Image 1 (tube, rainbow, N blue to C red):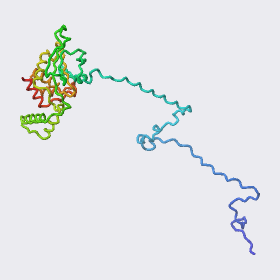
Image 2 (tube, rainbow, N blue to C red; image 1 turned 30 degrees about the vertical axis):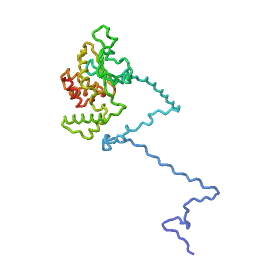
Image 3 (cartoon, rainbow, N blue to C red; image 1 turned 45 degrees about the horizontal axis):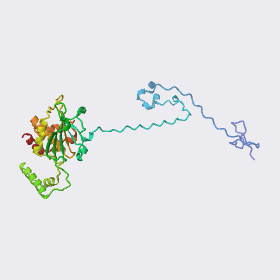
Image 4 (cartoon, rainbow, N blue to C red; image 1 turned 180 degrees about the vertical axis):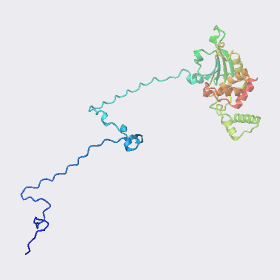
Length: 325
């Protein structure tokens, strides 16, 4: 058996057993709990370098990254724990009073020249019931002269003075001119002879203009009942009576005149006839063609649209011929 000789370089004898890597406890106690390593202590924060030290300008940093652009979270007050009050209910709006149109608004009263007015006739009169005129001129003044166009008048032309005004003192008694209008919507259909007469007259009028009556024009003539054609239902004698009546009223067409106020009334489906009465008077007094007067009237902003573009070119030529008589 060999003896172990110590290494000449070490004076301590070397053990034959390797040391254990873990501690050995010979008693019955449990091993102590393993202690967690402490987190490393961070070094104190260094001062922020200046923009010059970083080598760029502060203006080059986006605004959202600048300290001034960050929201100040600590600057807001802490929300109160009190409950939020309920909103006050909005009171219901007070209903507006109903708007009532002025009396006679639906009659579309229109002044064409100073002192000369046109309007639709009263509904009572339209149904054949006699009724005094309650429509007034500007300023609430009464009319002094009336031209009534109606399908209920018996005579073709009738002029009169109101009996109640015969003994009235003053130079302006109330005068009236009544002109009969043909019914446009008759319950009795026209006879064959009446239709043939209408077609014959239309063919002659077309030939006078150097035209021929087409099939479309033929149906327009046969089924036309007057309104919408732009031609008046008054004849030449009735238009002359209206012109002479207006000339004797003393209308001046300017303000501060003698106080003459004339009202021309017509059924709602006879607008062309009312305009024809006015045009035959104005064309004769002014010496101006009817078409030019109509263009001027249709271009005026103060004239109601219902009284515009109601007279055709053929009717304008017919009125102008009557005005020259």
